Amino acid sequence: LDAGRYILGTDFVDGGTPRDLNGHGTHVAGIASGEGNNTEGISGVNWGSQVYVCRTLDAAGNGSSANFAAAVEEIVDFAVANSLKAVINYSGGGAPNNTKRDACQYAHDNDMILCAATGNDDAGPVIFPAGYSTQFAGVIAVGSTDQGDTVSSFSNVGPEVTVVAPGRGIMSTMPTYAVTIPAALNYDTLDGTSMATPFVSGLVALMWSRHPSFTNQRI
Image (cartoon, rainbow, N blue to C red; front, side, top):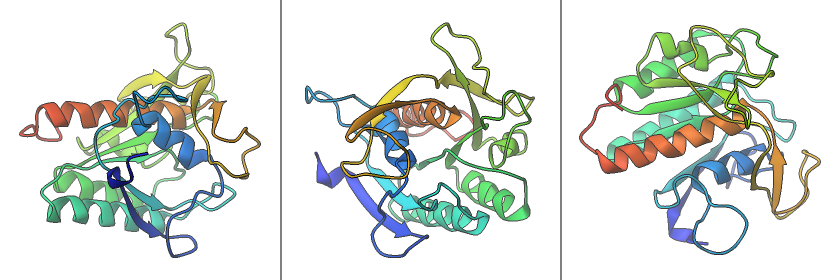
């Protein structure tokens, strides 16, 4: 593990150093950025870029719009201060509100990108913040596909969907300790638009690494 890759931001749930008590966040992070070329487990899409970690969801997987917005602001501000491009992954969401919208606008206006899951309501309407993809070029709404390259039955649909990526039966990292999700330690398989989203986040980060002068809209 390259400890220098990981920057531990704020735990907006319990304070202190972010620690995943649910398992969802670790699985998502592994898909986007898991260590590669180490003959162990899985390789993330992008195993070179720095990873900035904030915690916004509790052990049950629930979180507030205010904590989402605060995490977006923290990550964007860090990127601006250090002349970096931030690709923010948010595999969560719910109803629309001004707090989420303002956070999306903040990321967009600062030329960053937010990749957000469309939700798993069996072809229901796209959840937010992903739903703000039609208002901000800096927001990418990600749906899920199956192994046959068809849209997953659980994946939400609508004009807000920007792109789809693999989200069913995805093997990735899990915490080394027991968490809320009833999964194996270290590695396990999960389904969801939450898994599809970090494939896109990792790819976007690779694209921006290759073309650092591109705007978020160009990417």
